[in-house]
Amino acid sequence: MRELFSVFVLLFASTVFAQSKKDWVQLFDGKSLDGWHVKIRNYELDNNFGNTFRVEKGKMTVSYENYDAYNERFGHIFYKNPYSYYHIRVVYRFVGNQVPGGPEWAIRNNGIMLHCQSPESMGLNQDFPISIEVQLLGGNGKDKRTTSNLCTPGTNVVYDGKLDTRHCINSDSETYHGDQWVQADVLVYGDSLIIHQVNGEEVMRYTNPQIGGGNVDDLLEGIKVDGAPLTSGYISLQSESHPTQFKKIEILNLEGCMDPKAKNYKPYFVKADNSKCSY
Image (cartoon, rainbow, N blue to C red; front, top):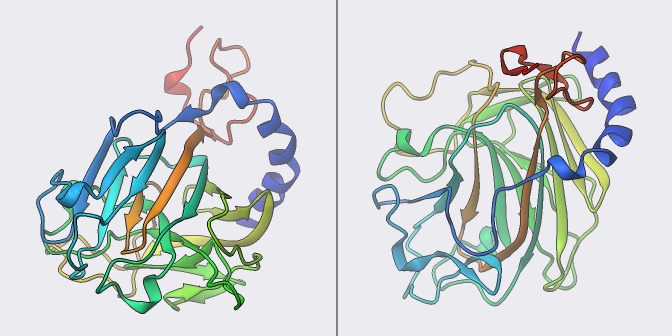
């Protein structure tokens, strides 16, 4: 069944998404952080320490100008609504220098966190949400460094047909040096299939996202249920110690009314929720 669904996605997606431009929802309005919630390690929910997440000249910006040192204050900004089947598009770039005390691996490093646990369920000192991370990386000016990789805080996936418990798996992308803008797209189909694209080209895919593995600290008791499928969740972006800007964050929901007789039927839906149909 999953193999057939994957073939369906390949045949269907390219033509349908071109017809759906007017239905994309802007998660970031270019003016404010309305609809978003900040959770920074060691701080209560919505304490945006140091004005880390802010809007500057129409861009959502991750800034550390009010930090004297990073001190492992890993942060995430969560959109208010959870999603299950969707296409998300983020246009990002890295700027400036890493804040003092940031880990070496976090230079020009951010991430789109998918199927996240809710921000309310994170522990005060928890570093990362249980989630699937589309790891965004910038080049150092000389070495190969792929982007839209997969990392798995508190999760595992099936990759190349078998359960893969590595924390990070590199994509097949090009390296993007300097402060150039890069477009990252992710097609998410519940717990069936996830596809990463960079500047319109597929760079990796995997199936069966599920809770498991490590790389998350200070979880609240009972939150991590290993083996549970990740069928839906919240979306967040990171503050991992390198300044980052986002000029577009938009989403196309792929779940809804699939009755062609309904007024709100959309031909690109892949998951039916006919309770939403209107006639």
